[in-house]
Image 1 (cartoon, rainbow, N blue to C red):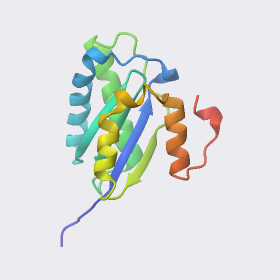
Image 2: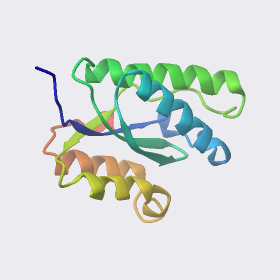
Image 3: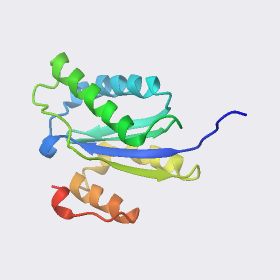
Image 4: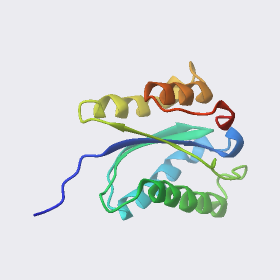
Length: 148
């Protein structure tokens, strides 16, 4: 018998202090680097995108991978790479926490399209408001002081 899964996550995390330090000129390189990390974890990336102060990742999660370790590995490795490559000179690091939201197969394409349109979306809604809305929509209790 083999192991089968269908675990879709939208993972969201911001830069330290929500500073706009993700240079748009190099975001595709960053996304490729993160894609490589995800592939090494035997997970499948469906979409990654963001703006200067945060990113969204839509991926599945392999059954052998713990969510907190997965996000930690993505954040640690990408942070080191960004500091070493010199293309993100103002980047200080990622925020301490993250948001992880699960979705069904029926919602998958909708979330992929939502992530694809992040740059347009954030002309209308700020990251703080988006993050708070995602928490509320997913019925997650939170303390607002940790959203700043």
